[in-house]
Length: 250
Ligand SMILES: C[S@@+](CC[C@H](N)C(=O)[O-])C[C@H]1O[C@@H](n2cnc3c(N)ncnc32)[C@H](O)[C@@H]1O
Image (cartoon, rainbow, N blue to C red; front, side):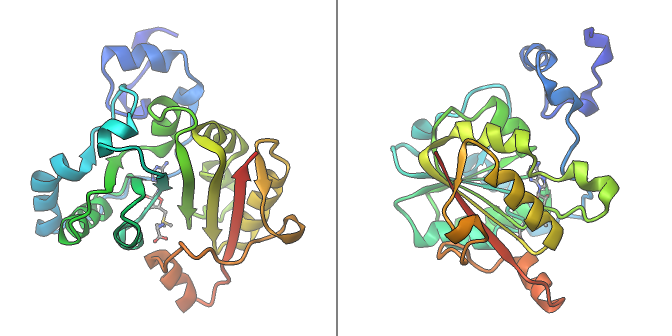
């Protein structure tokens, strides 16, 4: 494949020539995205938050490897949340747990704007935000064995069978994530989509890198860390049942 064959649209993140060379070697060019950028409009406050607060809480996606110790100025436990939505629960979690550092990755800019505002209101020094496809960040920018916990709460369910290929939680991504978790690092997932829950359980139970911590290798009790999210609230109104999954890296 030559450079001319690579359209910007298919690249996971804004590309420099160096990224491009890296990307050519990767399968990620063919990756099917787990999201569609439906940019609902940002409020003025969210736009202002991007302009004024990104330099404080945001990390620009690019080719450089992330160095958590440099980012947070210390070596603390590190938690990654993928797809934080409006970030309310992530901000509350970070505020309640100041000894731990939190990285949040999301593609929905209004949600990120919301979290920027919450982060400054709560004066969080232990939270940083990336606006990018988490699959690309995990693959290219996260160092190996750096995460104490990975949390994915209510990944987009993509309920139609023809869209299942878009689901974030696929065996290849779970293997990639395992390489970024510390030994005994946790993977917490919650979903209110019944067949997605079952397929995640089956796929992680058969993944050699992950060990199910729940009794009988089934679903887990709700973890204490997981606060009510906006998407969960919506599910509750619709009468959905939530399933939690809790694994540790072997
Ligand atoms: C159903 S929402 C749930 C949001 C939030 N966790 C909650 O419970 O309210 C899923 C979120 O994941 C985000 N998302 C999906 N794929 C992503 C990806 N590859 N990288 C980053 N964020 C992603 C979407 O933009 C969306 O905000």
